[in-house]
Image (cartoon, each protein chain N blue to C red):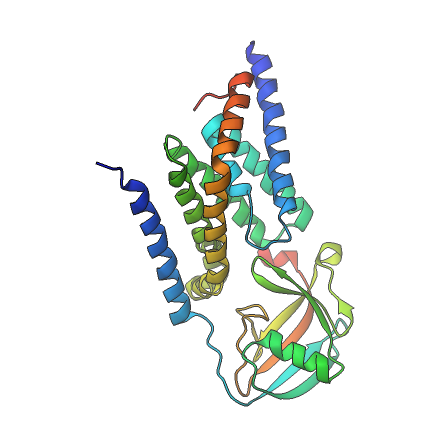
Length: 174
Length: 141
């Protein structure tokens, strides 16, 4: 395949991956703190590499802002998901579902802490600490849900995307 | 020898979850139980303030709001979200953030509230004000 052909194919895959993230997000919007985005971002990074997943999560964050409106919280999305891409990239050679379930669960647990980092710049350390502490029950639900979802769905989804990646010629780690 | 790494990871995750739970218990919002006299104020889009004096035993503000809803003309509608109860309307006035950046802010004793209504402890002598506000973009610099 030519370089141009590969570039076009990458763009199309990034668009499809973004659509999948959005669909997954909207599908579970009614269940607070239960989401598939973390799992999908981890698998995308594993199968397609960070160079394709990073633009995907940035476009996803932008679409979320368009839908929900831009606010101070928007900034959080623009560093949270790229941070997950980084973690997933560093852990991409894990050989066990449990390994990724723990990564996914840990990200859910730490979600509020990461969000509160931005609050430091708005309201100071005290406000950030209060914000984080107040959100801990939600983070615990998020962490447990992420762990279970990953445990159940990681295997089949990872295998399916491995096949798609191989057939598309894009499944090369960065 | 069996690979014990996964067990160590899960144990680490559990320890982190327990630590967070401990921190929440130690530093999280602490309600005071017993009879409490509090004031709930509603400031609408015309800056008119309606005051409700209440005596209650509830722990959280959302419960007090439910009590007021049942016993006075106070009304509210809200939805549960990732970070707790989000109030959409109070006393029939709906704040539509997507339309014009309007939202219902919560003040506790004149200070901007740190928690949502379902996490805000109700303490004796406190005043809670629901204020209709419009998001000011210039605030973000």
